[in-house]
Length: 87
Image (cartoon, rainbow, N blue to C red; front, side, top):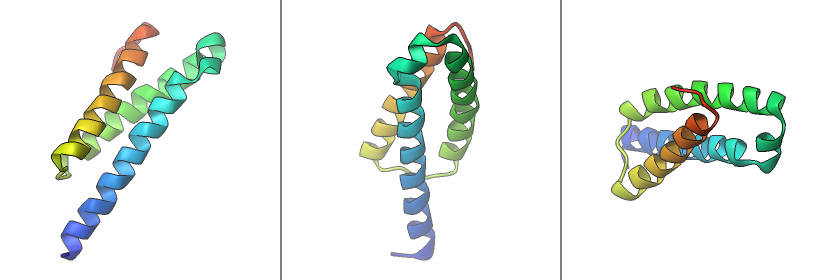
């Protein structure tokens, strides 16, 4: 594997891990019960969503990775919208 392909693979794995982390943080039941936690979690999710979308543009993802990433991003966006916020 070439160094560029290896760097891309590592960056893709990091991106997927970050998307899953953000999704988990917005889906926590505790987040949905405490307004102060909600505000912080959603503000972080908004910032992270924008960052991950920017990072995604520079990477080449396999179809399965792209589907996994897009699914997580769709859920994160739905959680942001659920709390009345926009990206």
